[in-house]
Image (tube, one colour):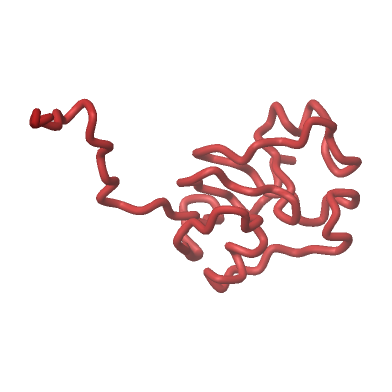
Length: 112
């Protein structure tokens, strides 16, 4: 019987700080909540007791537009009517359909 020793390269590191979704207005932290895979920015905001305005909840109207400051909120393959290439370049994301991928910082103000 052979014994296999586990090296640190084979052992996944445990993140001591679980991912967090933070909501800011400029430099002011409005609230934060633990990251929940699959939840939208609006759902995370509600958990953090931060209000992001919504209307259509489908990415059409742009009422929930926020600015991504840090982290990743993947975009859909085809941009919804509420976003365009210029806004995406300015780090705009739609809170109603945007699902963070781990730690993110979001300014609730749109990048306009």
